[in-house]
Length: 364
Ligand SMILES: *Cc1c(COP(=O)(O)O)cnc(C)c1O
Image: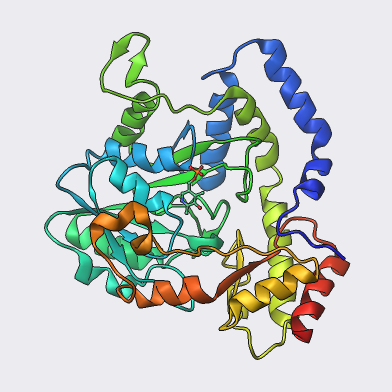
């Protein structure tokens, strides 16, 4: 049997007719940038996440860049980001000219170790970008308390956590602002690139709304040196359709995660804690093992697709050579990148497919 790492088929066959109707609506309206569909999606998404404002943009990286620019963070400033994350989190900070300050994760949760943030704060620190990595919320209240104590902006990188909840609040509504990505493989994905900023801060909302569109609120009146980073009408209309299914699709990921955790029983594997099932929206299902490369090869031979999130930590990437780090500087991130493997996780995996993955892992 073949079980791919990701498979959009069950999701996309379920909504095929509605997506085609959505395409026709936009096509027949003959209006493709910043129109009714973008307005409607922004309303729907802010309502879903329980924030006052949603400003859509071109991608998740842009969402984070626009938030930083909106808060006037740039050259001479420092921003704390987790050392274990997708590189986009750090690239956003670099793109505005600020310094990336890396903080190690907790090896059990993979998320930033909140207890290590305080020692990384200096008088130049302006913000913390906290990533809800793999769909699992960070301990947001502890981060909020730190941000209040040191007067820092609390920015959520929610690119992997659409719809996740933390202590009764939606991810994306807890920080000062949040950046989302609608890359096709995310829990809520467009059929192309897309992103959004959520916030309750009206000043920030007005500024990023202008920044994403050449720095202009009124056509040909440019308040800022902005960028062109807009969500297409067509993608917005697709996202309106898909948002209605997000709860169901996330529930299905939790079903799969529960089966994996309950039934995978192999002493060579470290699995996520069963108590996490309902906290995370399982953008990724990570396991860890000393024999990661052998396991990946074995699964491949059995027809099971896996990926590594992420094989090279940020401090060892060529792109960040200038930070001057070497192997051993962030041992927990290095340990994760050496041992982590992501199992197949997608809406609509059948019982047979799930059981096959479980059986193959238990026989290893
Ligand atoms: C995907 C992702 C991003 C960037 O989103 P894009 O839409 O690809 O630009 C940022 N942060 C994290 C954690 C991500 O997973």
